[in-house]
Length: 603
Image 1 (cartoon, rainbow, N blue to C red):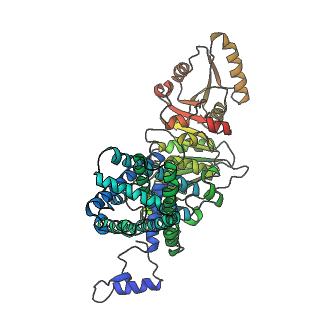
Image 2 (cartoon, rainbow, N blue to C red):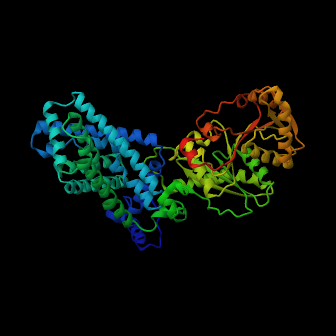
Image 3 (cartoon, rainbow, N blue to C red):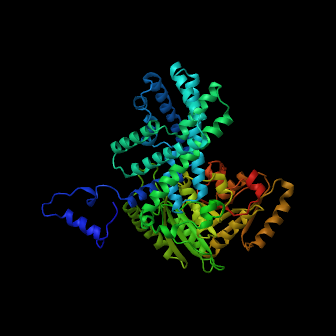
């Protein structure tokens, strides 16, 4: 329950009643035994975080299960209609069962899905493209599940011939209804379903939610209303029976019902409920929510012009990058074990005047938290994170660099790293690599290959086996990723006194002389002329690195044409040296612009 302002007159009356001389509790709205509209909105926004950040695969299959559950509603309705005749109440008694499965079971349903993501979008905490992506995936899953259910009814012999005749009759009745009438009836159905969601988040126990869901969905058949997923199932049933063309069913039946459900859910409920809450709803739903809103361009175009989502908690302020301001962002998941990562970032920062190291503790929220997160829970998360970051601040304080720390709480830790880098205008991202890496459990709206192939900054991925930079091995290739490793090698040479070895692998023995010349020129161009130069003419790149790395404490490896992060997140980076080398490894990938052709056809 939200904190109450003692200066509020209503609060004073309530407290007076609660402190009555008899000690007996009062009844009604004076005593807060239910959630206020602001608190309901807060719960919806918190739960919407989970929906809007869910991966397309999990959304689709949850919606697929929801669409198939609707088949239960359709089957029971036609079966009871066939056996009870014209008694509209009796035949509708089991109609809500499929919807109960969906809502109580946590499956995705398009009409029920309109409220939470729209609430998040109205607050400009999620973009319009993110909302449309969420709707599209859920609708596709619902329709696929409904189609599979209709096929099971047609070809599985599940319903009796009498029930089959009723199913055909109901489908033809829907198709024969005027377009505007279908739209209007569907709008009322959308109103009912989205209203159920609002009331569901106001309920504090499962029994209350069950009763609300049952009564509300019972009103759809009793009122002769239409639900888009049920209507699609009816349409597919007629198509499979050979009684209807797909195009006719979609345009004359499913489309008006779908539009009506959407308008009823969004306009009649979401917008009305949104404006009945107070202006304090943002601060109750997010930390400093107003400051965290998407820009108008981000809200309209999402990730195409920036970011498409604001995390549950983000305690950092966005940073405008000046000409002489070099920023290194260090996302960490465990402040207790990643001090070496921060030390590495600070070491690199000391070489650049005006550099700032920003350490971000990315807290991965668990999935499926019932009814969202309360503000006091998130307060505790941030307070605990700030305490853990105390040791990190001590590490950074030991270097002559500016440093910042902040906390981000999100369901999608991996994509959050990219958004943080973009928002902070980072020049370099230094992140850890281990079995518990951030991206192993984070969710993302955009495909992982799209994220990793469009880097917002240069990236260093550190496999921490102790930060010993006394002897560095840098295999040299003719690409920008090796150039980034050269920057790292120079920084560690100047700050930690590292001895650097440059390795060049020639494809054939007769190319050894050309390899030596290339390596000497490359060392001179990158201010590493004092490094030891080693040329291997075996043609075996990985074998040469393994042999040479045995005498070194830190290995710098650059990305290949296939990329680095894209291979890490898919566990397809199979390099022998990574397995056999006992020291720490630093993997480098330099951000580079990608053409439209690259984005369409890959690297």
